[in-house]
Image 1 (cartoon, rainbow, N blue to C red):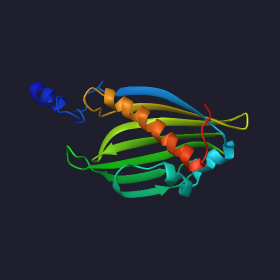
Image 2: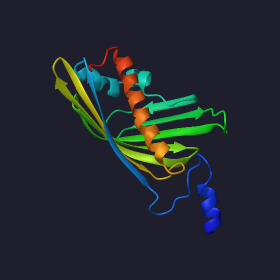
Image 3: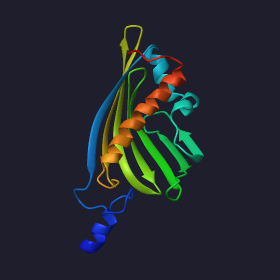
Length: 180
């Protein structure tokens, strides 16, 4: 690809850039949440596929999910996401559980695809600690955006915001109010 064509590809708004060595964007963040539920209840919300479907969802329609909660197992999800300003996007999520300590810790990796193009991959560590009469949940994510959108800044904000929304869904699935 010539330099001019490469520059044109990078100028396409909201389209992944062509992969060039060194273009991977990295982000690490931690979200903490105080929940008035015991660690066992919080852990079950991750492990039980029925409860999990109430708070872990891809946006859009034509959704499909499969979940096997064990070390070496994982989760797959697909959906079609309508977009008013562009063609419909096909989303895909694939994860693999690396470490599970009941009522204590879950470590997994996942890949996120848009239209069958790998956009980012992450290592996620979820830690559950007894605190007062509830649980302190700590979600730490280390992401590598291998196909960033534009300069990648929107991708980082999207992932951080999406994680907070997902944890709001966890609170709703547990039917508890988070502590300040």
